Image 1 (cartoon, rainbow, N blue to C red):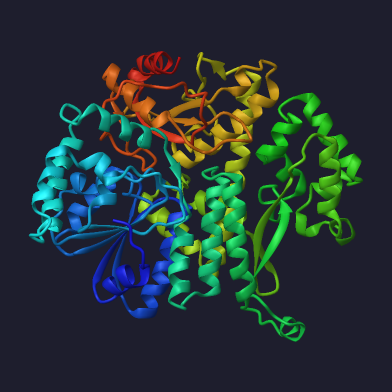
Image 2 (cartoon, rainbow, N blue to C red):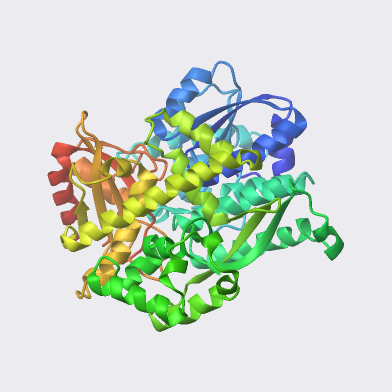
Length: 583
């Protein structure tokens, strides 16, 4: 059930209760969690935080805590599955779900007792009407005979439970309703950032702080960096947040001169889309940013020559661009953005600046929102110390606090290593022709023994590599058809268990609507070949599908990144089925 008044129907309900927070392992979820934690601390709400990286961990966490808690808050998980069917909770258990994953499961939408959805009402849901899914002719006759007995709410609930059981079985659900649900569920995408939703709650209650606003900005930026939302959606939400930034950070000149060393100030920026360039050298940032590396084709000798020409066109000496950005001559940095943008347009890079926000901590520390996203994501998927996922989650969560700048700087260093490894792997794949056309999609497999292959056993890291690889391949190939194809990348996940992790990403087009079909295609291919797969990631809406055989070509629509885990020996037959399915 959608909640219309978050303050009354959500916060005032749980403020006097013990709450279990189940938070997904993504940066937007962490930011939403930080905002909610700040509100809980303000009102002394008792809560327990449990990080969950997939459906298995979510089920395990619920089973371990269901006897101690009655109220559960789920962040970026749970909306796109029938949660009650999966968890089988008691009737006095209640779930409040703040999740960006779409489409929302229709059973969650029409459950009026235990499922409470905290989502922006201005998102375009296109949810089928209740009568189209759950009502039949016999119910209409019953309604006409019982209009005056006042039993409609309980009768409707009873019928809902009866028809819901049919919904879960493809054998009994009427074909015309399966078609309606197919149209609704076939594409997966993302809605408004959960961090923005939580900030709206804080704002409604007049408890919003500058820290909360920054976390909302980072949550939105994570969606943009991970390519989960359209450019139009990003710009719209940036405009919404910009009004709050003006309200929270308005200072006159006297106040500016009296800023303390521990102050915090957020500012709107129209900045360069160069990864971590203010904490790196300009040379390294240009070489390891996807957009510039692919546009200049830096994996080739000719590309390296073009890079030298690019710096020469700007009049920037190599000695300057190869040292840390903070150490560059001030005279060169004064008009640097305009110089880079002007020269970039000559080299075919026309969109090198983007609307974003920056934050100042005291006098010295300045970060762009994208810097925080890269650092936090790298901490969360850090493999250097082989620590448990929960420990990495807590470190990433702590790095979002301004009192933990040391952890943030640690995350920035990890992010630099990841970006270098990503670009080196992309260059290797392009130069050795590892990206091959399989008909309806492109395919690349990172073999065991590939440098840094362990790094790409994590979903966010592999998705980042896949996005960079497709962009670079499109820039390098002369085959016009291949330029319009999506890409599937596979990498070893656990050598001892013999598993691989596989991701699917959209074609490289500017008009992408960020919707996907790979979720259904992956599940259908696994089902038809009896492949041993694990749909454990929250981007996959579990395996509760309706078994519809109709499939459309994946080149007709764009789609968000989808992740699946697969047994190594099943990889070939799974791919063969996928080719047949999408051809």
